[in-house]
Image (cartoon, rainbow, N blue to C red):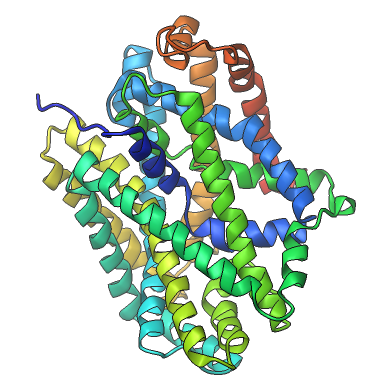
Length: 451
């Protein structure tokens, strides 16, 4: 059997895995959620949630992946010795494939807006920008072409393998993403009146803290780090045996959180400078911000033009680091479980996700009248994965590592067979057994409005 791929360096491990976590949600959800829920007070709660749920959850999936040294389904099968726990891996693979299909639709929108920015088509008043998005999203063909193009770009990276494709791309994309973000933050913070936006994000308003805000922070920490998608498990299968799992998880969490906060420092100062109260979601990215850039840099039009290009390039890179990881989950599965060459396995995943992308794109545009349980197919897929599949997968992963896998096996992976001191092992095991499942149950209940 052909030897499996592996990451070639510790930097590659951190950047690739952090890239899987960093995505569009860092830009359009975290800043707004933080700003509306106490600013720095929310960020402090969020960091606490990362420590309680995010890092232990990541390490538990790392343990399964590295010990199994195989795709997610096989890794769970190896540790459970043929018991049904392998279906946790199947669940993660299914979840990632669905997410990649509808995520590619939005990633394709980012590509369109990058092209439109370069062509100078996003200059105009607020009504023009709004109509531009409506006309584009309702077009029966253009959004599909851009979404399919994004999947093909992802395919070209994944098909080259772990070290020459995923790791090499991550080493290029993540530094570029960070540099673009810093340039945009500086540009935004230099605008007149920008400090009001900085204070909105970073001023700690503890009066806004409540049980609901804590649950929002808990949910944000869960979704931001790709828990429950089998991505962490799959990437960990390419880790070397001397990789410090806890340290890597901490470094990834720091990068993910830093980029989310910097995204807020990019968005809010510019928005407040022109008197716009930014909302969340796609409307922020494709309607509000193009108008903000146009107004904020109106005295020097070329600066607004360059800023718009840099911003949408940033979004494209952020989306690509996420789609690469989601694609790799199923590519590894098809390669190993069905003994397929990587090239063919990658094409299988590419075709499947293209089909999902096409139908999701049509469901929010030309065929919006077609509903699934009262929702567009895209919204249905989003709700299915976010409300059911992701939390279920993460919960089962924690229960598996915390209660089923022999304690000595977990300890050996955590301490690299005793070569690391492992002072925090007891805390980690307690978190995975009790804290993480409790947190995920609370996220479940909060999403359905029960608490």
